[in-house]
Amino acid sequence: MPARTGKLVSLRTLVRRRPAWHRSGKKVVFTNGVFDLLHRGHVEYLARAKSTGDILIVGVNSDASARKLKGRGRPINKLADRAAVLMALEAVDYIVSFGAPTPIDLITAISPDVLVKGAEYEKHEIVGAKEIESWGGKVIRLRMLGEMSTSMLLRKIARSSKGR
Image 1 (cartoon, rainbow, N blue to C red):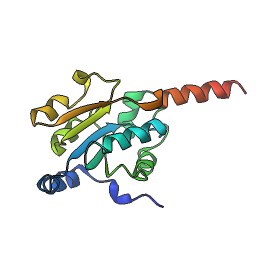
Image 2 (tube, rainbow, N blue to C red):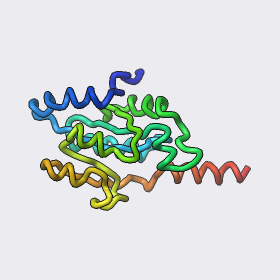
Image 3 (cartoon, helix red, strand yellow):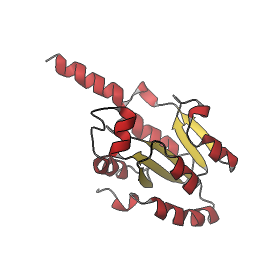
Image 4 (tube, helix red, strand yellow):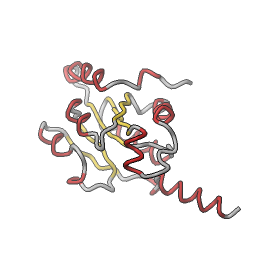
């Protein structure tokens, strides 16, 4: 089944839709990341994030933002490709890209009810945590299952190619 291209939306669209979700009692969940080489850890993380509310919005770093964050050679996949893979996931309702170093502008504009990040971050390190809690929202830290990360996968690929 092809991905729903309508999942990739602008911040303006999300801000317009937010009041209707609020009126209907829908709990909006936000998470963000680069999502460069999507793996089982990502898929399970996003499914668990979705289970904390009704609508899951995923902020995805632009290519330039990902490069600044992750370093030279990253992202491996361009934003359009990363978004297409995320759109295919049932758990993901909306995707919005951002080019800033952090998603704080998205978080303050969307004002989600729940902010989900990986447990590798301490609460005080999570961008937007103070803001979310200031309007009564909740911050949830989820442990990545299987200790999997894109960086780990890239190291494994590099080791494997050297062994040939």
